[in-house]
Image (cartoon, rainbow, N blue to C red):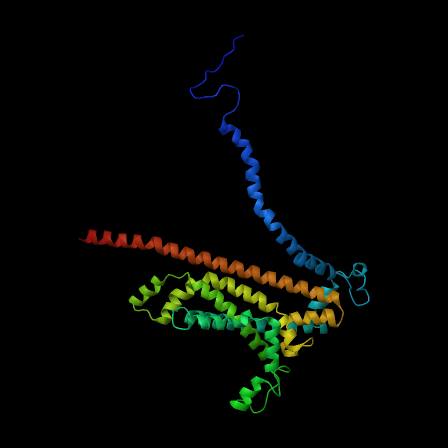
Length: 357
């Protein structure tokens, strides 16, 4: 039997031990695994808090929506009778008083959300564009614009509640006593004017957030684009239409979605402004769910309304993200086709001139 021994190459170790390169290979895997798992380990406390604060109450609320949970079974809600889909059926039965009241509050909330989000975006964008160029006092104005966003919600809304008082409120004093725009002092916290008062407060405390986001988005637009447009003869309106708004499209997509979710779910503003019983003209769906749960003590129906609201917001959010992503892909494809089509057109034009010559 012949044994063949490989000859050692120059500089190669023949004592049976592996080289340093081969020895380090297996040792790197645990370190790599630790480096990969470290970010998840750091996120674990936040995930646990998110689970405790949001997900657990959400799961409990969904479970309560299938039970006949009233003040008589609240002490031991786990032993409450199983109600199935009756709570959901009662909530969407728009011919019954419960469903009719829910539909009314839903329509009021939709109108309020559209107006509030639109005005917040419009005022915030206009203020951010006006604050784009440097001038004396710009920093002070920016700080003043952010004051409504920095104030606590309860303090700001309580201040507005005093301003909307009928007898000694600042709003009636200015509109009726000083400017004479109304025949008599108006009731702003009751009746149909309550919707206007709620909208004013919501826009006042919401537009600085839009101003802040749009102002941050304007910093990413190169100034060379405006300079080139000015040299080409474009005015301010054309620059805003052709440069500013298209460049702010990704920012506006996120901004509108966040404002929509915040406004549609807003509970603090109407609750602090009107109290537990909001006027019919300003009864948002969040306040209506609160009254159905904590005023009438029908937690099963209130939980079912909350689940329906969650499903509606998820549906609207998914449709919005789908449409905006589709529009973004279409605009990118259009720009790409224009960028690739321009050289071909120029080359074809030059070839035609050469052929004609």
